[in-house]
Structures are given as structure tokens and as C-alpha cells.
Image (cartoon, rainbow, N blue to C red; front, side):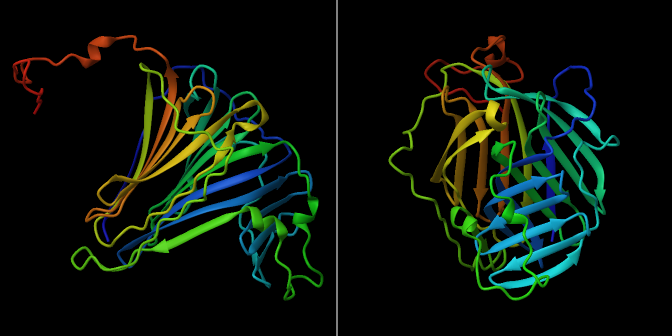
Length: 346
């Protein structure tokens, strides 16, 4: 299997901030897209889970459809309850409340245009064996916004996580409860899982035979969902791209549609739209601010001969173009064309 991973980021020139510390208790929604490779095949998983972080009691819980995972850092034990079956494993890293001091500061970026919020991003080049991590937090409250994990070992994987609808509290502490005796077979599935979704499909086959099964699923829009919005007629900013590609195998496609809040209670709401006819074998998800239709995030999934997942962030957006000369076509090296012909540039 051959693949590639690339990250392009233009950073803001600003003093390097020190590591921040998140609230000691918070909860919200974790939206995850994972692309992994096994046996020359690339599969993607799109999940939406409820996430609970309690540094005061040293516990973390993740609740999804049919499962609940509780990390007890007092005992350094992970309890995994899947459809009534419970298993345990050891936790290998301590629970952190602050950004580690040994990570690198990447830069500061503005999400959601002038009325949005600013984030600081940090890079950890030694998060684990053959694994790097990027984390973005709000500059004012250290609320987690995004995380990207890249593993280049024998089982390559790229995981993109978004933290949305964050509140600085935990409404239901029972999510941390462990059945007693520890991890017996249980019959009940957490009711919190009813509000979560999981979509996992794996493309089978090879580049040559193009065989396999694929599915596209979306959560239906309810009556309160706004219609398509119109972006400002002129705007400019920074586009940051995370791309994972594969040469052999096929790629699945999955989608989730909804409205979310970025940056915690002081952040902003985004509306997300899904386009399954964006191009041949290509789907697209776009997020825009709910009030100004400012582009925030775009995810492209291509399932053709060269499968590809691309995540694009739009940051530092302003509703203007300071230098219109960026649109000028120079001749040479570009050829001169008559006004009745479409411009071409080699």
C-alpha cells in the first residue's frame, strides 16, 4: 500500500502563547472521521459520540450507539461496554488538563470570520510511536475545538476530531458509573446513545476490479433546519488542508448533517450541508456560520480510481479582498488570449 499525508498551514504572526488549561469539567459532542489502511484497502468511519471530561475525578467517558467507554485514570483502567459485554484494558497515558509544555506552537487562527473566535494550535511530534497530533483550543477559554492524529506505522490512520456543543459542566455524572462487580455482562444500553450516530463502511476490492459496496447516509433535516445560505460576495482568508490518499483499494463515503456550536458557550453556531452529487464519485460536506454564512469547514470524499479524503479549514476570513492584483494574469508566462476566448494558463 502506498499513501500520502500532507498538512498546509499559514500561521498568524503573533507572540507565542504559553500552554493553556481546559476547564476541569466539560462535556459535549465528539464528531470523528477516521481513515485507516489495512491490506492495501482504505476504509473510513464517521462517528458522532457524546464526550464527558472530568479532571476533578480523573475520569473520561465516551458514549456512542450501543457502547460506553469509561477511562478511570485513578486506576489507569479502561472499561469498554459494547452491547452488554464489558472488557477492561490498561491506560497507557495520564489524563492531562493542560497543553503539554513540550509541544510546539503552530499558530493562531480565526474561525468564523470577524465575529468568530480565535484558536491556538499546537503540534506534538512525539505523541506516540510513529504518531503525531495537532490540537486547536480557543484562545480565551482553552475550549478544545479540533484534533488531528496521524499515524504512519504498519497500520496507517488519519483521525480528524471536532468538539462541538461544549458546555463547562457534566449534567449526568452516572455516565462514569461502572457496573459492580466490575465489568459483568450487562443488559442495558445507555440511553444517551440514542442521540448518537455511527456510520462505518469499508470499500473492498482493488484498483483494477473496482468491486465493492458503498453507502451514503445522512441524518434527515428537521423543520427547523435553515435553507442554503449565501456567502459574502467578496471574502479572503487562509485555507488549511489536511489530505489523506491511497493508491490501492477503494474508499467509502459517509456523511452527517446537522447544526453545531463551535468554541463552547461563547462560540458560534454552524450549519452543515451534504452534497452527494458534487462530482463523479465525489461527495462534499460544508459548514458555514449560522449568522453570516462564513465558510468554516469542507470535507471532500472521492471514491474513484484514486480514493481521497480532504479536509479544508477556512480561517482568518475577512469580508474583503485587500489586494485585487491576486486575480491578475501575467503574460508571459501565461499566453495572451482575446476577450472572446476563455483565459487559459499553462
